[in-house]
Image (cartoon, rainbow over all chains, first blue to last red; front, side, top):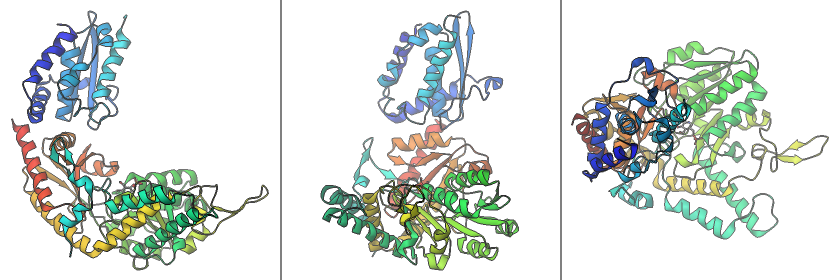
Amino acid sequence: MTIKEIQDQIVEEFSMYDDWMDKYAYLIEIGNGLEAMDEAHKTEDNLIKGCQSRVWFHAELKDGKLYFEADSDAIITKGIAGLLIRVFSGQAPHDIVNANLDFIDTIGLTQHLSPTRSNGLLSMVKQIKYYALAYEGK
Amino acid sequence: MFDVSQIRKDFPILEEKIYGKPLVYLDNGATTQRPLTVVDKMTEYYLRYNSNVHRGVHYLSNKCTDANEEAREIVRKFIGAASAEEIIFTRGTTESINLVAHSFGEAFIHEGDEIVVTEMEHHANIVPWQMLCERKKAVLKVVPFNDKGELDMEAFGKLMNERVKLVGVAYVSNVLGTVNPVKQIIDAAHVFGAYVLVDGAQAIQHIPVDMQALDCDFFAFSGHKIYGPTGVGVLYGKKSLLEQMPPWQGGGEMIKEVRFEKTTYNELPFKFEAGTPDFIGVIGLGEALEYVNRIGREEIARYEHELLGYAMEQIRAIPGIILYGDAAEKSSVISFGIEGIHPFDLGTLLDKMGIAIRTGQLCAEPVMQHFGVNAMARASLAMYNTREEIDVFCAGLKKIEQIFKM
Ligand SMILES: Cc1ncc(COP(=O)(O)O)c(C=O)c1O
């Protein structure tokens, strides 16, 4: 699936919930279900700065696609990381660099997950794009 | 008579809805709300009297100057200082402490001297001393606290000696809520000839203070934590000490005569107030203190103490609760966690219910390290909080537990 298709799918899933509690319960579920990160990848280098909770992101290039792993000690943050991984993991660096992130707005989390806040959403997206830029054309 | 429902009417923000829910504001340790009277007073001065202080010959300038100096007198009375010359207006607690670290530090601290702080200090009462120690090759010593959040007074006693020149201590810890035995610390420090700076940022709004009774050498607090405006704070210093200290910042207002050969400095307190001060902020702070006086500090302290007792009782009953700071002498700050839930998640979910708390390291990383955590959640009370709000808060915590169990 393309980045756009995955985003549309997420938008549809979230549209089932109109109560914020359910949205968060779903995010928590995503966080709990996130594949465990290789402990060896929880390094200082992979730690994302600017979050209240600790978040690690690790990227690896395989056959021209980027694969991400993430973990956080806060479950909502981990859920957000899980969403981002679902959207971006397995995509080509070039597509990640050019991806648009409107879906976050569409699923109604912007109000709660505003990028200027301490949840680190923006920092995570920046880190993903940064990895993609670094691997683009490799 | 202390009537909380009447007091709440003075604070329009308490009527706000957050995501459609009534605001429950429990982040008063970070900043309190301002009553209408403070905002009105400042608006009046902005709209009718604004003019720079201490330099005008005209009516408006005199009006603002008088109001600025009246506010200084209000502060003097509020903290029981001997003279208005001992009241220096700053931007806040942080700037007050930095002023002392620079100016007192310059005159009084030498290589090999020691400065004592406690493990529970806000970064504002740690970092300026570390910077001073680096400049002067002095040594910073730390008084530890026990797991209830009480200072180890025996350790404090052992740290004291003739090399100690200054002790910096929070009256009330912004994380643990502990009311420290500052009087005992001040008296002990004086025996060794050491001066004492009390960080009153979390005390001034909860506990009546009196400089004569305390006998501290410096006392710092922020306007915005006692229902006043942001950007203005106070440094109290004993006159005899302030007189021996060199100015910190140079500029207008703090001078007597400027010659390229030699400049002489103004009298206290202006020596330490370089540049145009936030005089309208100062006037607002004066009004905030008058407001507190009208309600009555003893009454506020009694009400808050009772509310804290209720809150602690309710919060203790939450399954999985972890309390940080359970000192016998405690003021309106409750730091906590819930087993298996990150404070950030707690704060995020409470926010969705209209409940404002603080999460993170609370500007006190050494306290986080003491308890071996990366973050805490903190609910902090003010005189306008109610039992009903505590109930909403505790119900919120229980609801979050359920979301996590789903
Ligand atoms: C104990 C303590 N000291 C110092 C400060 C710093 O105050 P301000 O940021 O107003 O300068 C605070 C504020 O959080 C505090 O709680």
